[in-house]
Length: 412
Image (cartoon, rainbow, N blue to C red; front, side, top):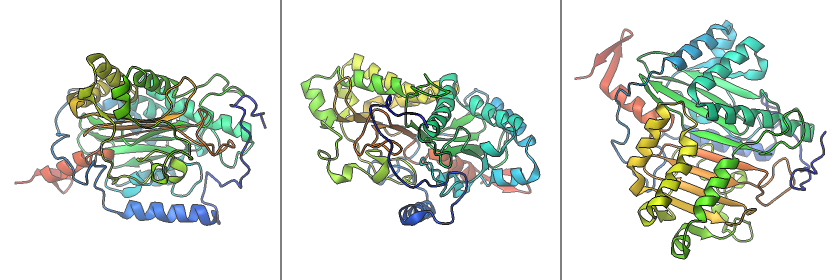
């Protein structure tokens, strides 16, 4: 076990470990309730995140992009071809399956599915990582891998290998990798979830959850690894360009300590984050300042902040995603809670009809801290109004075509 002296002076929390690789016979009353609640919310019909309960139509047209998705499909097939029959059966789900929605950013095994990377041989695991690499940008893939490495670091710090490890991540396929038919894949584990939906040459990668505790490895074999520092510091730079009037509209609370925030601003272990696991149908009103109240320079800084998240996607498709965000810039809101000093903890949200981004400093789970620290960060990216998991694309596809004997038949 490694000393925690370097990690913000925080000690380790004393708690009973919960297994992360398979469902324990007894997960305890608390986790049992959490699991039942998650299962209940997944059973609810998918609607999508909205600002007022009403889905805005026609935001995500099915159309050719001219940017090939063949590298993703080919990487998926190469990975699947390396698996045996039992592994393939564990990997595979129907494209309409609600297993898409059963991801969870916590480390305990409660609703996991798919094949566990840790159980694969080196060649199979490398192929799985190539699929992630082909779907994400170089920066996005590096962040994903560094989150996995930091999940090893927390194992070194705590010695709790029942809970942590670099390869405790599950991969699932939805549908058959195809040039024309809708399909997708998911990686799901502690602090890292990517959902990739593909139809033709269009791609959706939300929900994306990226986080870590710690966010910087100051000890161990991955010493020097860090994540989400640019997202943290760029958000802070933006808020500190605001004048007093802009700050009064943007900053809802000047602290995120539990003694300051009202209870409804925190959701259990997710802190301020509203769109983590099982919140596919959340109604989240716009809050903060609307971007048309910002200067041209501030609007561009807001776009640059959003680009840090959209640029996790593979090149080409990332630019299309950012352009969609830019088209709705006038309808984009920026909200802040917390301090604005160089060492302060905070939460921020970027919210428009086509994207919702959350950043939050979290209390400790492995570390002993009931208040947020900079050692623990969560971020989430969502596509509001029904296109998380590519669901609106899938709806349009099914509305346009019926499948007869394996063939597309245009509905009349």
